[in-house]
Image 1 (cartoon, rainbow, N blue to C red):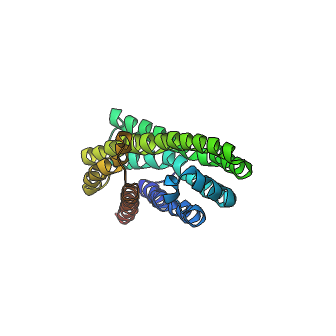
Image 2: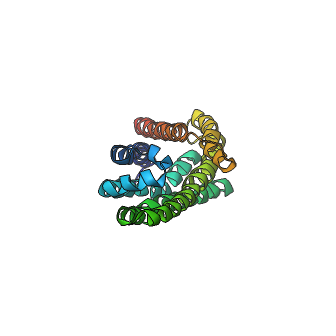
Image 3: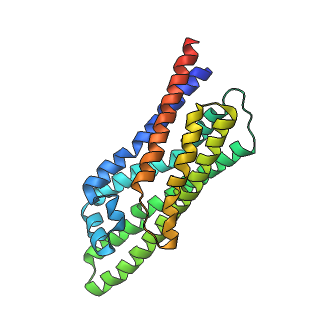
Length: 234
């Protein structure tokens, strides 16, 4: 059976891996279809790109799907670490677990549209006459708006932010992780929620919130490795 130090060491590695994993689909999709900028391309521009790079698109989004589902593991790990040795499982901890699981599901739904509907539409678009292409444009726009709202607005801006706030409060209450992680989590949370302004017709910057939450994750992973090392020495 793992000791607490060993568990924290393994947890730290998992959290660090999660913080870096997004770089893989970013590299693959960025080279193939100029992602994430391509998310804002009109269908007439995006669908031919997807068709031309269908293999890379499926690989990149497949890895991205795995990353999104991995939050079901990473989120509870961080919540557990936030409790520390003396913390007890209560309503806030259970809420955090529920929110991050809901986030993973919403993210997965948002991403899977690229592996299913959008890939199919891209193949259909390439062989369709102009009048049919116009109809496909409308369908792709609707699917993209619907999937983006579920993945980004629900999955990230609502559920992940709720988890981050809950975990930050657990850190500050129980001290399972350094206090600055709790305070910085509360600072990152409203920035991570900022894409929700798209619901009111305003443009949102997705790059800054994404960079901040992954930097926060990386720091959490380093803190867990440090605790594991200190515990072993102790």
